[in-house]
Image 1 (tube, helix red, strand yellow):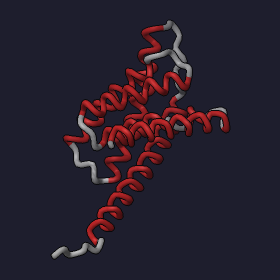
Image 2 (image 1 turned 180 degrees about the vertical axis):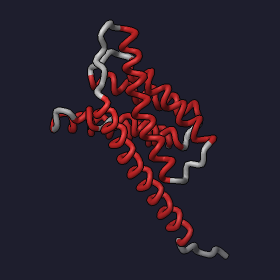
Image 3 (image 1 turned 135 degrees about the vertical axis):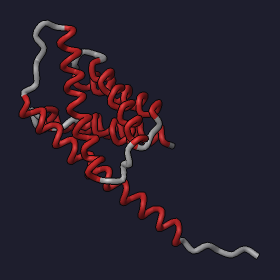
Image 4 (image 1 turned 90 degrees about the horizontal axis):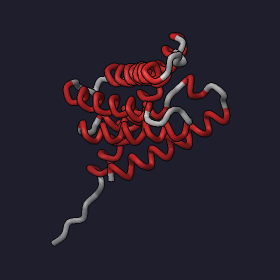
Amino acid sequence: MRLLRFVLALLAVVALHLIGVNTFDRFSQYVDVFVVLIVLNALDASPAAGLLGGMAAGLCEDAVTGSAYGLHGIAGTLIGYGTALAARQVVVQNPLVVGLFFVLAAALQEGVVTGLLLLMTLEPPIPQPVWLVVKSVNCGALGLLLWLGRRRLGARLAQRARSKVRKVKL
C-alpha cells in the first residue's frame, strides 16, 4: 500500500511539474516539487525506503527536466536517506522542525547538484543565492502545508474509525 501511494504521488508530482513548467517559465526556479515528495516520503519511512524513494524521485526529475542523467538521482538518494535517518533521531511532530527539514533538503539538493556539475564541467551554472533562498523557503512552505494536511486527514480518518458504530453479534 505504501509503495502504491508513493508511485501515485510521484505521478502527481511529475504532472504538477510539467504543468507548472509549461505555465510559468521559471517554475522550477521557484519550487522543487520532487524534493517535497522525497522529504514527505522519508519523514515516516525507514532509511532504506527513504533512500529508494529519493532515488526514484530524483531519477524521474532527471528524466523530466532533461538535466544530466543521474544528478538529481544522487541528490535525491542522499536527501531521502539523510532525512529518514534524521527523522528517526528527532521528534518530527513539531511543525517548525518539519518545515526546517524541507528547507534544508531543498538547499542540500541544490548544493549536491551544483557540486556534481562542478566535478563534471569546468563552468557549471551556479544558482544565484536569492533564488536558492526563494526555492528553499517555497519548498519549506509547500512541504509543511502538505505535511499538516496529511496529519489532519490521518487524525480525522482515525477518529472516524473509532467512532464508527459496531454491531454486536450474539
